[in-house]
Image 1 (cartoon, rainbow, N blue to C red):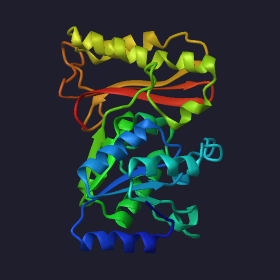
Image 2 (image 1 turned 135 degrees about the horizontal axis):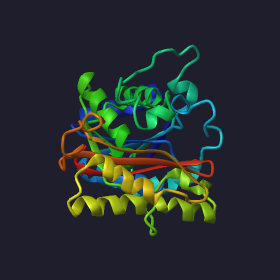
Image 3 (image 1 turned 180 degrees about the vertical axis):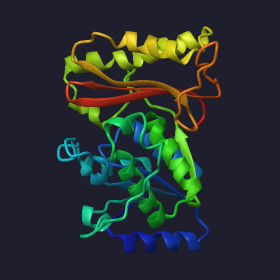
Image 4 (image 1 turned 180 degrees about the horizontal axis):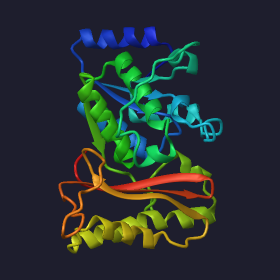
Length: 289
């Protein structure tokens, strides 16, 4: 496994594999790897000749009062995990490699980046889109892999790739959960035992909503209400949002005489909460990203 920190060097390495007719798979990460990341890399290895994983804590996607400085970083552990998995190359650039002094070009995916998490994190998705497009231009992968926990991110990246004519296939893979049902996240390490117990109400509320949908519930407002009730009055937990939206456009369902009827082939049910100071997201999807 090679570890490369410079853009010219990683581009040279990728061109070498391209000349040999090998396909390139890519998993962009911010490090602090867990089994969710590893599941992406494992699938990438199965579907491509060469697997590249980037580790870059992207400052552009953090707001001014967010956790950029304390975001968990453990490159040695990440390296060991990826090496054991059989990853071919880690791209591990410094901040100035991606954003040189004077950098001023950013990507904005309008509408998709302004709803759900974008309401409380208004600059977040511009930072995501910018770094992902830069990494795609650097690595030029055949396929890139994202987790469905960040469903809005996956939808946004797919739209950006389509509309900017980027020649890459985006794969969005299922959420990986811990033994207690909490969606795996690098930020879970922030949680105290009491906060973790409170956080479990998020997946539990989503499970209740899914069960109601499976039993025949179709009204978006009622589905939201089921989740909001499951998150109400939980110590240490505050709700950022609960939304039921179309998966392709992240838009609310139109109001009809029978209610806001969801589409079982095109619906994202998503929620974000703060537990203590830690922001967590979770969702389930009816249909595919």
